Amino acid sequence: MIGGDGATRRYRVAHRTTYSYSQQVTSSYGRAYLTPREFPGQRLLAHDVHIDPAPSDRSIGADVYGNTTCYFHVTAGHRELVVSAESTVEVDPPAELADGPAMLPWESARPGHGNGPLAVEFTLDLHPPEITDEVTAYAAQSLTPGRPLLAAVRELTTRIHRDFAYRSGSTNVSTRVIDVFAARTGVCQDFARIGAACLRSHGLAARYVSGYLATDPPPGKERMIGADATHAWAAVWIPGESPAERAGRWIGFDPTNDQLADERYIVAAWGRDYADVPPLRGIIYTEAKESTITVAVDVTPVEAW
Image (tube, rainbow, N blue to C red; front, side):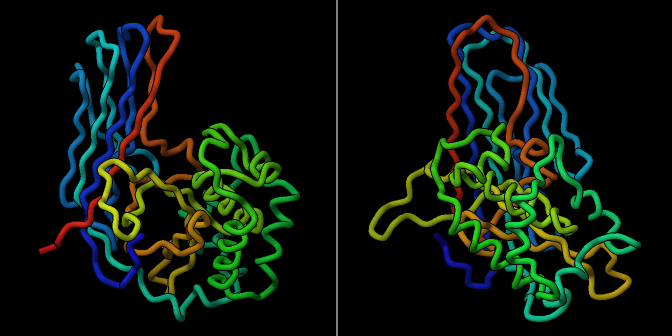
């Protein structure tokens, strides 16, 4: 993994998804969240999405959270659909957190009463509910009264990393937090959702973040094109340092890797849960009984100048 060294990084991200079907698909509607976001600290320098077969209709829009989405409709008959996105993104290191609101008691970071109005939605539970007595009690071990927010979030991140084993294929997009608690296994999206549920259970605002994490090959090995993967982490809201900063800011934390998000993390989209921002979703019309999906992701550091 590329170590965060406090320098601005530039990456080229290639994300290719291939759907194959046992019989012809006559119509395919799709929605993609494959365009990295732009915000202070991250700049999108170039981006393109290629769809094969070519869609008869496509459009670009934004959802309620400001994520860029690509809609497409393929009407040509096909047994294979390929969606390829290529992006060039520049990411700055996060701002210093040694002082300021992140060091105040976590209770002061609860949004409401004119403080962080846009963050309030991210304090709400999902439907069906994910916040249980077990989740609340688990979070309380880190969110002790008066503890600085950053210290509490760091410890919660470490505890999830320690207490839940990463096991590819052990869950799917429909697996609930309560089931992950029971099995004590999951993948990055599960651990991000656990972190968010824990913070929400105590009135804090937390969002689910979808994107990419830049990695390096093991020592002595060459980079394997397409060997990377999409990644997921969570972010907690903290208030601004003055009345003029009512929007506050968000601190990303990654239980899968037991660290805070830094310049290695490339944000594609954010929402309240995975269901808000899946990389791809859609509807097809076909008599096919079998289908497969193959995803290849490559995140390559490039020279900025």
